[in-house]
Length: 246
Image (spheres, rainbow, N blue to C red):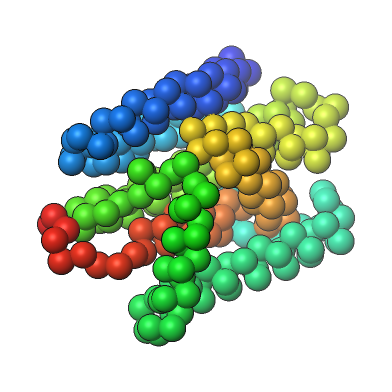
């Protein structure tokens, strides 16, 4: 089982931070001349995310690793690991942020005011972002983006929360839990190197810390899968263009 753990960790250190970065640079050049480049990139992203996640699930099937150990369990608040203060502050922040996300998702559908507010925030964010080329434009791209979002929610929570937190604790039993949280979150941040350091690595690391606290507090990645999906799903919202391809 330890060999399998190391294979995943080395893969996470090398593949996304390095190869993922260069793949994205190539994509940015190609998307300017190839209208189908986003579809290709989305499809490859889905496959690439499922490879390590499937390997982890394979380890569950052939070793002593269990689904519960990688976070696939019924959520239940646990204050013993992090203490009451960290647990409830983390849960409170997570709940507030989830409410905000749901506010914009639901409001986008039913309120022109909220819709325009979201579009304005998105426009301001994109002006400072390196990831605008990746965002879906056509109806076909937006439809596939839903599956990209779902894939990211499921696989990244399995990999970076469920598996890594258990795996690092298993390989290094003397590490304090917050050090484990920090290492797993930094690896999560490095997987987003292609987005730049501040908007990609740093901000995603902070999200990783919050999500790790939520995971440890709940003992389950299932709520985080839904939360993660919604965070990625909302990105596809934008003005409808009648000239978009179907």
